[in-house]
Amino acid sequence: MSNAESPASASAASDLRRIAASLAAPAPLNWVITGDSITHGLVHTQGGRSYPEHLHELIRGELERVRDVVLNTAISGNRIVDLLDDWDRRVASWQPDVVTLMIGTNDASDGGPREVITADDYAASLRDFVARVRELDAVPVLQTPPAIDVRNAPERARIGEFAEGVRQVAAGEDVILVDQYARFAELGAGGVPWGLMNDPFHPNTEGHAALALELAHAIGIRPEGPRARTFALLEGLVATARQNA
Image 1: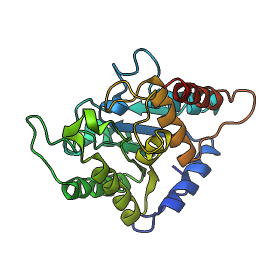
Image 2: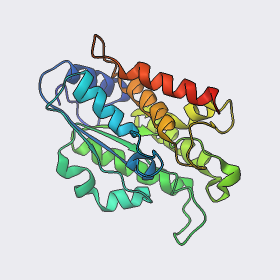
Image 3: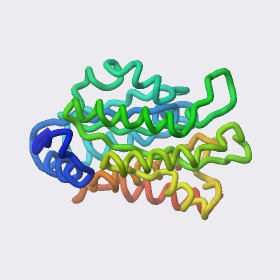
Image 4: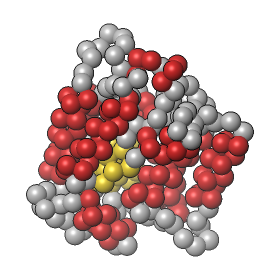
């Protein structure tokens, strides 16, 4: 990617400028989108498109960046440590220019067979993630996990703490933040965004439309011209889902 800065001097502002300059240049980019089942995007979209697929449409379709690669390496059930343990396969080997991460819904769980971790443990792993992405000379993008139906997923009641951990790491490491948790809470008028969920913590097709919109806006992807149809479609899906909730 052009206009690279050293990891020590990179910031969210410089990263956004770097993405904008790269999108205006002809050299192809490698986009790695990773995380857990929400990003994996299977089952709960029920045949609809996931948010990484919408990003693919925006970049390789509407922006006509046909030589860009938009790769989804998310794995259902994963925590941040699983991604870090499989770093080469999931991230480094693809020589990424931009790496987006949404993970934490499983990290926040205190039910099931896995060890219970604290929000501080999670935040430390996120800082490791950011450092590794910077070492690859790529742009890290941190997304908070979306707000969930805590009443029906009590084992994930700490999700708000983990979302706050993402915000704090993003601020401390000065990286791009996409606050999906806040957006879903807003769409749910402070509660659960009914109409956007397939179960207590997995967004449905319309929920993925909302995730895609928030991510695209945050990193400056906004196609214009006659090919620019996806934003209006996604906005319509979200609005209709909220009305019918």
